[in-house]
Image (cartoon, rainbow, N blue to C red):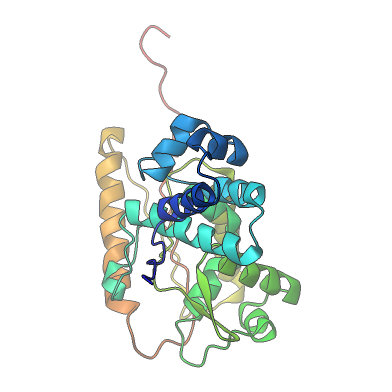
Length: 268
């Protein structure tokens, strides 16, 4: 008896489910399946053919309508995240050189938008890391409840994977900032900038580096400046976030914003 290969994408997993139902009932149709999961036949066809990405929110809704177990839901979400990450160039980096300015899809980011979720992933790179809520909470100075909830969310979206009774970070996903005007992303950076402000009083100059420049520019150069900032961040990661004697987790925030009020347009 031939063994069926395990689905590698969310579209393959949905095709498997449709195929299973069709084998059980030869009269079962694509339209019946689309009605069951609450997706139009056209949209379902695109999902099954991999032409339309499946969002994490849709994955939860579809799994619920199909009556899938938590394990089956977790599998679909993980494949969904993998699909979306692959579309953005996040294919399993083999070294920190691939790290930096790649982004998770916004709907995934929204699930793990609290700063300490991403800090846990970085903390996991430090030798001696213990995937224990109490240990992590103490290292990051957050509550036990916050830590426990964060670990659950990271596992749910596939950023932490379970190896027996142990949790470890998935090597397939990398997180950085995003230009998407999402409230979740704004709140994430807002909280980190507030922590940076607090560090002026709580950390010595040897433990931090907070500097800035004020310059007049042509706004048409903003895209090029963004690219240079992105390249700088990638260089920092390639040079310093590599296997070695990692001991602490740091956050690098780059802030570029307008100080002047724009001049009124001619004729306004």
